[in-house]
Amino acid sequence: MFDTLLYTKKLEAAGMTRDQAEAQVNVIAEMVVDGVATKQDIGLLKAETQKEFAELRLEMAKGFADVRTDMDRGLASVRADMEKGLASVRADMEKGFASIRAEMQEGLAALRSEMQREIASIRMEMAAFDAKLVSLEYRLTLRMGAMFAASTSITIAVLAWIK
Image (cartoon, rainbow, N blue to C red):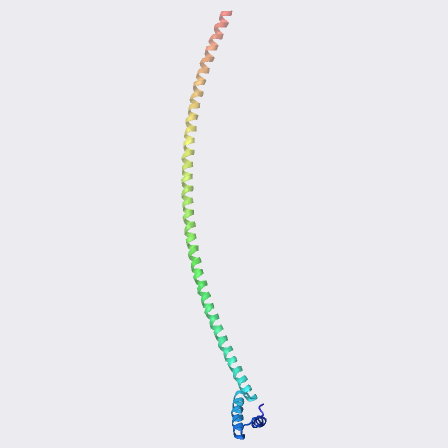
């Protein structure tokens, strides 16, 4: 608080006239009063500040809600894009697997065909070998028969000679 009477007396004691001292005190009092806040001023400022903070909180809550909504939309869009990409990758992989399966089936069929040809060739060689064995067996049988007949003739001749 500014004591204007005391200040006026001090100015007069310093050599100022009463009018000069009062004029200077009035100017200083206006400056002090204008610069000093009253309890009512502080209460109004406090209420105004609380109101502004409440409005700011509402704006921030709305802003956060908008950001969340935008983020949810963005995430949903990203998820949808990822699912499309994943579906595309899966489709491509399935095509690739189908192609590989087809190639493997073709290779397996070619291998089976080649093996069947080899087996047929081996069977033919075995049949030819069997035919040669039968022919050889037949010739051996004929030779053995001829040898038996010859040994029998020799035996009879030797027996006839011995007697």
